[in-house]
Structure formats: structure tokens, C-alpha cells
Image 1: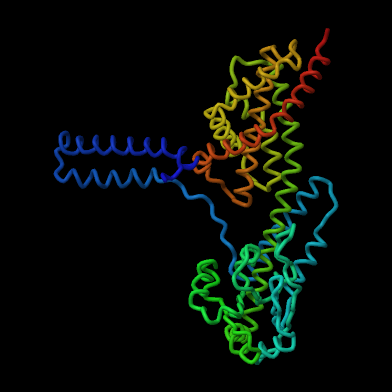
Image 2 (image 1 turned 180 degrees about the vertical axis):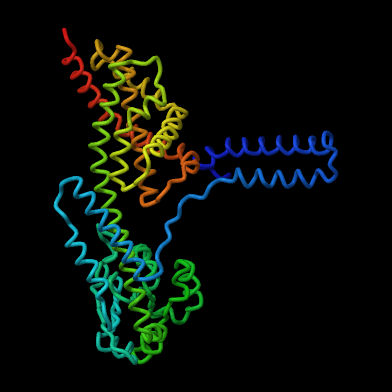
Length: 449
């Protein structure tokens, strides 16, 4: 079967072809100039050099990559920065501060201390050895805290890894043979950076273990191949089986450090999600207000066509407030250029044409108003503002905390950002149509007799 090209690859192909055409033309022109006009020997080497330079200048920019801290101190700085962002956003929205509660959660992670804790859990229907046997099998040179959890159900409405197990320094997960679909789902939920081992009881498969082991490894993700502990069910053999876990427990300081990092990373990710949700809530009100301000401005002074610069200028206030919401302290010029790139991509993708046709289809809502050219143009401007604003929000979310955004990279990413925003807004078209109908009625009522 032939691979289906992605949207990104389809968008990138024209740019790639243009780059090849320009580079090829430049190389041919350079070859002719060096050899025929200037009579420079070795012109071919110059062509190679020029071609290499063109390739270097035309190569696509790399998107910003989040560099995860590698120490507890680094993650603490990240979390403190998010707390400051929460405080700023809550102050702008005149909402109650949540810093004290979040600070307690942060302190709880930082103040974790030895001994190390090991969580032991089994899939539903799988028996566990007694706690005393497990304690004895894991005992070593350092103290140990053992947490034996309830069996994980094979049927559940909430497939989330229990928080109590996430907080353990290490994990033993006892599974049945053969594995069930629910067991494989549970394995996907185990945190990637949490030290964990799978324990399987050979049981009745002991006589045909090579074949059973081959089938088991084929089912398991690569992560578990080196963390698979095979047990024959004999209690006196359990301590030998758990040797890899005991060896890991012999370095409690290192294990505690890794746990703090992992839990701080989880906390940072959770807070970022909550912060983005607050930003989007505030942005919705801003976008709703801005789109009708733009529509009103266009209606008051209708233009023969939707000019890109006019739309970008009309959205200046929205861009400024968006920068405050996402903590992007960029200059108004940078925001305007970004908006132009996104609006240009929206126009190139036919957002206005689609919205205009859709508005004509809804003209029967209020025939006397909706057929007026100025009103149609104003509503198209409002819809374009909606799409540009949504794509701008996605771009700011990706670049939050960046001192100076890469506008050239945005130029490359704009078609994808706009395509995503346009698709989302089309799904919300009915809501926009209802808002537009109400706005038209308000304009008609405000029009002097």
C-alpha cells in the first residue's frame, strides 16, 4: 500500500520545488558567469560552493524544542515560573489566587525523604504473595517502605494509572499468562521514567516456556524486555527473582533524586495544562469581543475587498491582550507581522471564500440585512479574525516563554496552524452563525430611521 502524504508534506512540496528551482537556476547562471563571462578556471567548484550556500540559506528552520531540566533545581525553577504565570493570569482576571495550594504540592515533592518506597500491584485475578514474604524478598542494606495496592480491574470506565502508584519510587507489576487486552492497556499507563519490573508466573506454561516466552516478548513493548522477571511460583525462589529490584534499591539517594525529578516533571506538565485551560477561557471572551469590533469597523467603512493590512491593524488590541495572556512580551511590530503571516495563509486557503458562501447559504435568517454587501463583508471580516485569532493562540502556546519568536519559522508553520484553526471553526460554524444573526439584528436596531 502506498503511503498517504500528510498535510504538512503537501504544504511543504511547493516550497521545496521552489527552492530546488531557484537553486538550480542559480547554479546554472553561476556556471555560465564563471566560465563564459569571467573565464575563471575551476568554475565548477565555485558552482558547488554557491549551491552549498544556497542550500544552507534555504534549509528549513528547526522548531523550538522544550529542553527538559536534568536536575531537581532545574525543575524547581520551571515550576516556580509556572506559579508566577498563574499569579499574573489570576491577577489579570481578578480571580482568587491558587498559589498557596500549588506551593504545598510542590513542597511535598521537594521534601520527600528516605526510605525508598516500592509499590506492588497485580492485575485482577492474579494472586500476590503475602506482604511479609515480599518484604523479606526485597530486604537489603537500606530500609524499605512497601506499598501493596488493590488489584487493578480488567474493566474500568477510567483507565488512569492510580496516583498512589505513580508516587512510588519503584514498581513491581504482577501479570498473568497469557496477557489480556486490559493488561496491555495498563502497561501503557505506567510512567515512562518510573523504575518498574514485570513479574510473571510461569505456572502451567513451565513445560512450554520457550514458546510462551517468545509470545510474551512479542506482545510486550521494548521497554519491558529487560525488566521482565520470570517466577516459577515457589516462594523460596522469589528473593532470587527480585534481585534486579534489590540492586536498584541499594542506591537510595540516587533513586530519591530521580523520583523527585519525575514527580516535579509530572507536576509541571499538569500545571501547564491547567494554565493553558485558563488562558483559553480568557481568550474566548477576548476573541468574541474582537471579532465584532472588527466587523463593526468594516461595516462603518466598507472596503471593496478584505485587505490584509486592515484586518491586522484592526486586531491590534486583540494581539496585545493575547500577548499578556500568554506572557509573550513581544513588540507590537512582531505581533503585527505574525498576524499578517497567519492572515495571509488564511486568505490563501480560501477562508474568506468559504465563509462568504456559507453566509449566503444562511441569508434567509434575515434577508433584508444579510444581502447587504457591507454586512456580508463585515461578517467575513469577523470570521477571518476568528480563524487568525485561533491560529495565533496556538502559535503563542507553542512559543510561550520564548524571548524572541522565529518569524521565518512561523511563515513556514502558518498554513498548518491556519488549517487546524479553520477546521475547528468550521465545526463551530453554527455557533458563529447564531452570534452573527444576533449581531446583525443589533446593527439593524441601532441603525437610525
